[in-house]
Structures are given as structure tokens and as C-alpha cells.
Image (cartoon, rainbow, N blue to C red):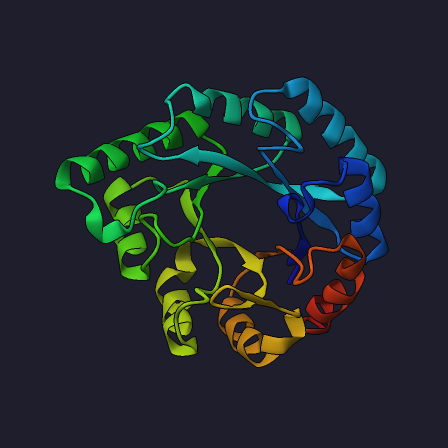
Length: 247
């Protein structure tokens, strides 16, 4: 199966796109998720075109764009800028946030309905591009039952999910989340954390092998996010661990 193995660029916000691409290439990875805050800002198609050309020169694909559009919260016009950058990067997946800053169980009916309506709007705007929800605490995807309900309530074929383990929940919860969301998962953010403690990736290898066993039913992007020490020099060793799980 042709899974993409790559890096989320926001792992190294202080580094330039070229420094990041050099590190990705040296680590033997094949792809990058450019972030919409620093490396390819929303709507700046000149930067996006330059980043795309540089990525092509290094032979690194761009399977996804990490935007900071928050459904039901961001100014609606922001998604036009996000879409312009995604098209300039020639990517087929845009990451968005399912709300932001509050737990899913605190949404009023009106807030939830507004989020559903906004998600329908941006999915229709994206058309041939997949819109994928960030899986994160304090959003409408902070619990997998809620995430699944939201996707079903929006009812758009191009609405999918990013997935990452919830570091505040036990292994079995995360396995159940994969089982429930698998039809919608297009990309996985890969890291090993226990609550707020960042660990070397290999520290939770036993968990990740179980996750990958379930995820392996389909082709998915596996993107490293946030080295345990925030050092770009660590990427090569972390990538070696990731690659070993697919050999």
C-alpha cells in the first residue's frame, strides 16, 4: 500500500521551508503538510507557488494543507484564502478545525447547527478537494462519537477526518476511535505523548503498532508532528522509527 510518510511543517515553525525540506529528504520521508500560519499563509498564493516549486525540486509531495480555519468560528471569507493556497500548493486535502476553544459537550443547539451549516458551505466551496477535520481536544472532534455524529450531520462526501491518538485517554479508547472513524480517516498525525509529556516516538511503539494494524485497511498519510525535543536534528531518528513500522 502506498502510504505517505511525512512531516507536519508546524513541528518546526522557526525553520524555513527549504531547511524543512532538506531535513525531510535526509530523513527518507516523502511528503509534507505545509502549515497555513507560517510556511504557507492563507491566501498568499505567491508564497504557496514558491513553496510548491521548492517541494517539487526536492521530490517531496504535498498531500495536505494544514489550515487554521475553524468551522463556525472563523470569518467566513477566510476559507476563500485557505482554498486559494491549497490550490496553489496543488494539494487534495485541507485540514480545518471543527470549532475551537471549547469542549464539544458545551455547544448549544444553535452553535452546533451553525457549525454544521458552515461545514456544508466550505465543503461545497472545496468541491473536488477533501476537507478533513483536525482531531483535537476542545473542538467538536474531542470525542469520537461526537466527531462521527458531526460528519454524518454535515452529510458531504468530501468531509473526512484527520486522526491522532488522544494522549489523555487510554489505548482502548483510541483503538475504538479508529474503528468508528476509519471510513473517514485520510491522514494521521504521529507522535507519542502522555498527557502533556512528549516522549520519543519509539516510547509508545506498542500502541502505534496496534493503531497501524487497524488503519492498514486503507491508504493513509502518516505525518510526524512535534519531535519530543523540538529539534529538527531529531527528525532523522524519529523518521527511522516510523519507517520501521511499515517495513
